[in-house]
Length: 535
Image (cartoon, rainbow, N blue to C red):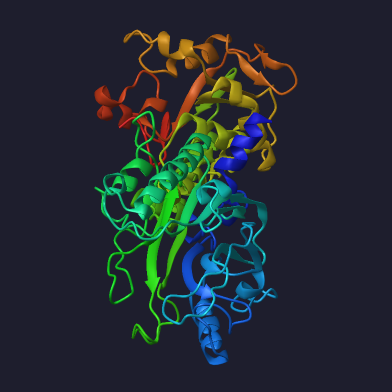
């Protein structure tokens, strides 16, 4: 089960790379990871009441329609809202036909007299609007931020199933009035309250850091967190063990949209996101930015996250898309096949072949890595081998069939790990080439293949296995019994590979090209592989 999970994680995007028919090449350059963009927004909507005529900031029907249009223009998936009175208030802007609405379970607080209008206030809570179709797995309030005061806001945390896996999103509305860089050095009542909220917020971040799952923090922080020297910013971005946090303020470089307050206090933070995720933050201005006409005294800020797009290297593009590659491999195999057909061999004979980029084409693995901005790792390679998604190198299948039809044997000597031989065998079989232990010996690499190198009789890590083929002592893969030693001693009449070290007694830095050329196409057959090698 552990291996299957690894395969699923590493190659989940492979459904986008079409699996080609045998003897054809995958067009990896045309693959797509699909539309996996997720947009998260934060919007202090300024005293949104229900009905709209209530509260400190009553709205008219025309204003409500403008707010609906503005909300739609955000083109967002999840919105963290501040200063909302109830679910009904939110549903005026985000109708329940299209949105799932959640609000903190903070008990209603006492109303107060609004400063400018003298009206009685509505409730100020935090809430979420989540586009329908997105699975919300958990909703949890964070009452600690209210400090047991009915006038302070709870936090509200959602866990959603996103294109990037489970994602926790915390929505906060911190105490207002503490607009200094170091809240601990101010004696104001607001900063004293803020100083009690700050460690609670930091503790939540620390818990997510330790859990290692992606998380987002949105809201009206009522604090200028864009400055790196801000005390709370420093707390949030350094873990208690003094290690660097993964937390990043994606909106730090934005400018506050209110003409009077250019330093932003609405932010979206992210943590534990993959380095291969592209992030784009933005602020959405209103059509009328006159302070008296603004739909709210805060504009919405948004963050779009999506898989970062990487380009394929020229080497992978050439191997996966070019007609030249297909021609070269097919023509090389055609000439080698003709050589086998016209020759007469006495006794037991064999052709030694490498597997990767010689029999099986793994350019799909390489393309998938590059499109994700990743590099080869033993774990990802093993998972690829176990997934059995490699295809035939053009010409390989016909060549092997000709050898067997002619009465020869095939020795597949690969530097894949020997414990993965069964996956290699099954991969080849499922592509339509029927292998038999009586005429095909598959040998993956073991530690002895490297440790036996002495620089004389054994120069590279395939020489020992070639000698074992010639002496009849090879340990070959057997589908039913694991290994067998019944492969008869055979004369090696041809060696086929994509690397100069696929030839007996040859290493890259000492290769005698003039000598090798004398056997080119007869004893030594070399296929192109621009993606990787001993070079």
